[in-house]
Image 1 (tube, helix red, strand yellow):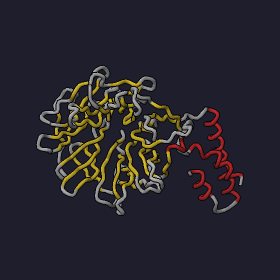
Image 2 (image 1 turned 120 degrees about the vertical axis):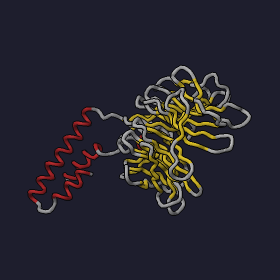
Image 3 (image 1 turned 90 degrees about the horizontal axis):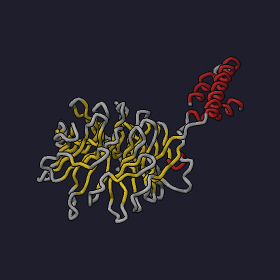
Image 4 (image 1 turned 30 degrees about the vertical axis):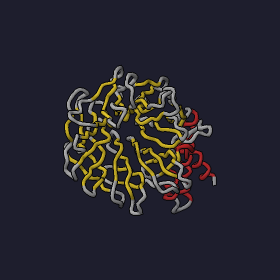
Length: 366
């Protein structure tokens, strides 16, 4: 009994972290959404103006900045690197959808060279300035591209499976994740060193990858054999089903180098619910991990950095950043002391009760 109590004291050292939540605010409207977060915790996304028009924004933890202040139409930021360069799309014609890829260099908004495209999209940017996106030509043909510099021309991605390769995420090694498409084909893909790798599905017909970590983990969504969609985590060789709440559907939107995946799922009442997955071992409703939620509910989580900071949006339409709670030094000492005591008692149990060593050590590892 004492051993179990000691293990319970030590357990928090192995549990998912707790978080504090900060709202990023708005540009005067009633909605905002954090879509991307860099290593410094700077969030990029969208907020509405008093006119209800959405504008791309950057939030540094204190100030929400309109990155397209002179643009009269809708804009949205989907990626940001550690230098604070944000990329996204901006509507150039209010009469019909005509999104064009743009970047914000910290002081001004600029459009990427999109050649003869009638629409273009910038999805993500790495710390080397490589930006992945999509072009749509006048014949309604789509092509995935990468801009090697902010001012350079786009370079088409190789097509080795299907007839369309699209990258939605890129890490600093230049490895990309996204999708390949063709007649009857939509599969998550990884693109490295010019080679496109089809990642397959979770047993259904389609999948798509939305995020890649710096060490190559990939997160996304796939349908399963029953037709429902589930979040997945790809560990470098295998696509793992991360499961879903009782509503049966989940989406994986962001992943970091510590195997944490964020996204959302639907509960039994079909409420959209922000989720955190620890590798393939545990699934958490994010609301249960926030120390200062005060009744606020998280609808979806879109990105996580390697410091564990997360961004997303509440059910009330307010963008947020979640920061891991760092344990007080005294708590760390107590956890370490509890774990040491558990191990010591485990050895004593082995010495005095033959055959118990494996079960004790297994309990300590958990």
